[in-house]
Image (cartoon, rainbow over all chains, first blue to last red):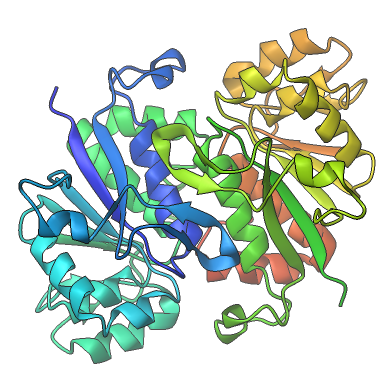
Length: 216
Length: 216
């Protein structure tokens, strides 16, 4: 089985659950069901790592201290450098996205990765970064409910979906914070099969797929 | 408004979402609704920090690198030392709990904190640590579904609740991983009111309170 590399961007002021939710989902997925399989990487379909603009520890919203596995500089030396190829790029949100919107290096790095990965994805206001990088042009997309208007302003060619939890249109965007876990499960289902996604949801006791709305 | 100190234990092999889920919930709760209030701590009812047995970075399940704000040694010097008083202790789970069950210092630290906080809580197999420390004697409690039998073995006086997502009996225990977020919201509701909990759930787009099971 080919193991897929999931690269998660983190930065000062990243919303904890935006990245930690999908990190949990991808890193705990196993093709082999049960608890024992979670003790090793043997049947893990994903290898998850984090990347930050600068090396060294950073603080999320709420001041949790996290250190990324790689920094942008590791890609400057690619392919000779230490940076692994990515199959899936995940851009989370948080108040820290606002500073990145005007950071040339971040835009360059995100665009370059998006050009090589199979899946470009965002959680919450991570969609603002993708929009600013020009990656959502003419696509349907979503973001945190409080940033729907800003997404539309950043790129008026985007068809902003105001009620969707996850939008798949080449690029996969999700609504706020916890919606990133639903997005991760939808991707696991698409890549590994529904059964693997449902077994992983049961393992981490997350309600997925969500119960249908009452009356439906 | 009195701000409550939430201390979250983390350790090598802690399950990411076990601690990051409640960390998100407590740290993003605001008495003042809306998005602007989340930009400052002005109306934050909780101050959240992490504590690890040893100082320095550690790896969670899935190898995310996190550094706690404090280590056990900070309490050795209390009250003169840097360790803040805690109002709420949260003990998460993960495969790393197994090593801690036989770690005398961890048991001592957990017992000492539980003796002074208003709320002692666990997520997932964090309940095994509380049981081993003797804190669940004669109480109803729960844990991850795969560890229900082990919880019963560790302390046969515990009434193990096999179908509950959160059990409140002086000490608050929750089922596996994602159930810790439901526990956090129940505590926010209890401490700050239902309205504050529901508004915070809406802010982070987490489905809480959960939809009633179909047919009910």
